Amino acid sequence: MSPDLSTTFTDIRFENPFLLSSAPPTESESNILRAFEAGWGGVVTKTIGLHPVVNVAGPKTKFLRAHAGGPLSMNKGRDGVLHSSWNWELISDKPLDWWVPRLGRIKKAFPNRALIVSIMAGSGSDKELANWQALARACQEQGADGLELNLSCPHMDREDMGSNIGKDQKLCSRVTQVVKEVARVPVWAKLTPSTTDIVMEAGAVFAGGGDAVVSSNTYPSLPLIDADTLEFEMNVDGLVSPGGLGGPAILPQSLAKMAQMTRAFPEKAFSGIGGISEAFLEKNAHRGWKGLGDFRGLRRDRVVSHSQIRRPEDSGYHGGYEAYEGYAKPAEKR
Ligand SMILES: Cc1cc2nc3c(=O)[nH]c(=O)nc-3n(C[C@H](O)[C@H](O)[C@H](O)COP(=O)(O)O)c2cc1C
Image (tube, rainbow, N blue to C red; front, side, top):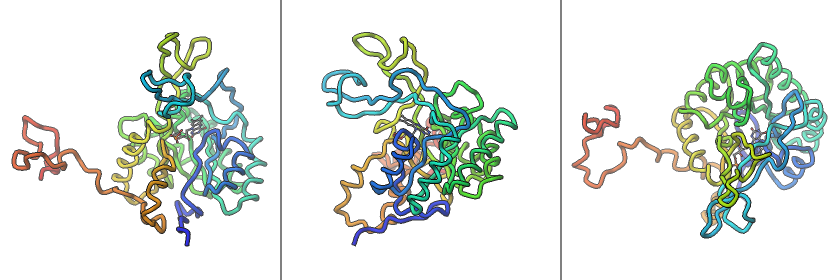
């Protein structure tokens, strides 16, 4: 008997908990249909806005690889070991009007797979906030099962958009609340990982009525400098602007963000992204896991504060609260 991986998350039923996140694999109707044919439980569409956007010239994303004896590089061939991806692709270059009929067709073709639509607008005025509502209404009318608010795009010039919203707790709450006013489907918020304490922004999303928090989007970063040419490995006319790092390199950071949030809000819903590959599950196939419950929240209780970790000489540990140590709170003293 094959394992039952079905689950319900924010009242949405998933045949399995594996979703494609918002990115090129979900940028078109044909890609999404192919993903469903391949068995994905759901997709989050490439982020949709009201207006067309134009990407930079040349490639928008590349993979960094480690090659024996050389520096990490994105331009030295595919034979190295994958380290990360680097991207400065904007949101979908197709506007809402292009997407609307396609969303309806996708949902009709695969009514039992989850179609989550990622949306993005500004936040600097009431008109901008109303744009979020226009996007939400149009997508849910086409049968979207849920909405994901992009509060995390790492390469925005505009101060009232993308990760600049995700860095501002008040805006996180406000945008979520505005969408919730019109939403008939669950609303997830995808936060930027680029803040001091993501628990604060997650709390702001929940205060605004959000049904789930999603993390991580890519980490703000620059491409590396080529050791031979001394140019950025990805550039247009020699110029580059901050983009986002994803892939295996961000898995430990994504795990840390998720642990921080799930510890702070154990009853709330979270969707995890960032450096995930099938290798972990494949390696554990022999364990005979029968369903999702067998590995949900794996080792969740093992993340504790530093002062709770055993010292080589237990008797020599003073709880970390003495003035000369001073790194733990009295409450955490053993
Ligand atoms: C080329 C590219 C385009 C992306 N576009 C979007 C987007 O439009 N909206 C969004 O919310 N995230 C976008 N992302 C972020 C991904 O959804 C994901 O959060 C990130 O890549 C981390 O996951 P990974 O390590 O599995 O790549 C994009 C990522 C890449 C690499």
